[in-house]
Amino acid sequence: MRALLADRNGRRYLIGQLLSVFGDTAMWLAAGIWVKTLTGSNAAAGLTFFAFAAPSVLAPAAGMLVDRVKKRPLLVTTDLVLGASVLLLLLVHGRDQVWLIYLVMVLYGLAYGILGSGESALLREMLPEELLGNANGILQTFRQGMRLAGPIAGAGLFAWKGGGTVAVVDACTFLIACLATLSLHITETQPIRSEQHWFDEVTAGIRHAWKTTVLRQILIACLLIIVPFGFYETITFAVVGSGLHRPPAFLGIIASVQGVGAIAGGLTAAKIMRRTNEGALFAFACLLFAAASLLLTLQWLPGVVAGILVVGACLPWVLVALYTLVQRRTPMELQGRVYSAFDTLIGVPQTVSIAAGAGLIALVDYRLLLAFAAVMGVIAAVYLLSRDEQRQAPLDGSAQPQDPAYNDSPDSVTLPLSERMLIRGRRGSCRSPRTSQRWVSQSVPVSRGQR
Image 1: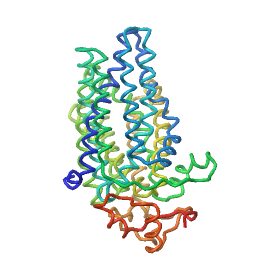
Image 2: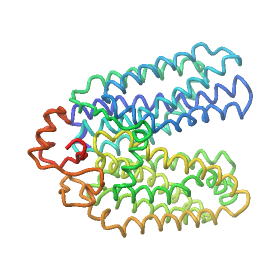
Image 3: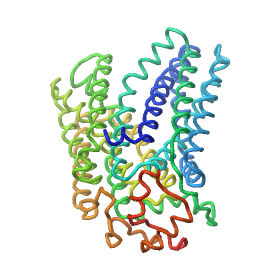
Image 4: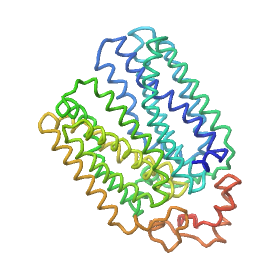
């Protein structure tokens, strides 16, 4: 992490994102409280989160946009537009303006489809490969930490000064993130125009993820583990009420413990991954998730606290492993679409599993659901650890052309160094000047059409 923070671009971008995440988490909860205050309706308040989540169905289109333009100007523009949109909330004075809150949350959802894939692609261009895991780990630490501080700050500021003040603070954090991104010194790869049909363009990320062995394997593992992760949204209520016989307010303590575990997971993910690889980190997280699920079946407070702490650490490990593998195993021209493909393929089953968990908890003992979660965690871990490609994938960017785990997609080939340097000269530098020399020496997958 010291190496990452010593990098000028990495340091500035991370500081901007820290403040932006704080503003976002404060605004999201404040929006729900605001609607509840104006309408008195729990359902109306809940719709604020639906308004944010609904635009995720457009994630593949957002990924295609990211791949068709330069990332830094796109992120700067998105931050500016979203920051200005948040100021619309200053017009909300009563129940008749609640629709403005919903509108802003929809815009949030649309923008985050762009910001998520755009950030992943920008990190891939901005940083050398050995720092990608550190960057993803720190970002996860920020986000998990802000899940503890942001909502409390947002709710407190709303109670003190009202929703308009929260909106102004959030808009300022977007401006800071915009300025931080604008100050980056990088030379981006010129996006490649394609003559393919729009449907082929949108689905290119899904096809690449499925044809590339290591990405397909990590996707299958994600689908195995995402269902029990979704169940946890309702299982924790049963653990507190039926297992520990504590009041619902005790969930606040459980959430705080989980947040502490998540911060620890974000801080340790890169170090563990550097000693192993992405697949091993993902598998270890699944095994710990299985063990934590069994701990939660105990009607014993220390055991439950330990289990929740471990569950909190598992999610950042999973996400850091996934994002780093996607960044490293995807050509630059597909970074946005592959990220969006994973976001969609994982997000939809997760949403379904949350709904299924809410229904199943009323029909079966919560300990059976926890046992199911443990079994799925073990299956996902064993599946990944038994794959040769996951065990052999190097983390230092030293994969050779003959390594099938690095470049086994039928849509790509690896060119000799002389041809790669020629293409690189036509397309522009893919890295900042500090890392350009290192980048020339690596194998770069290029599609047959480009060759």
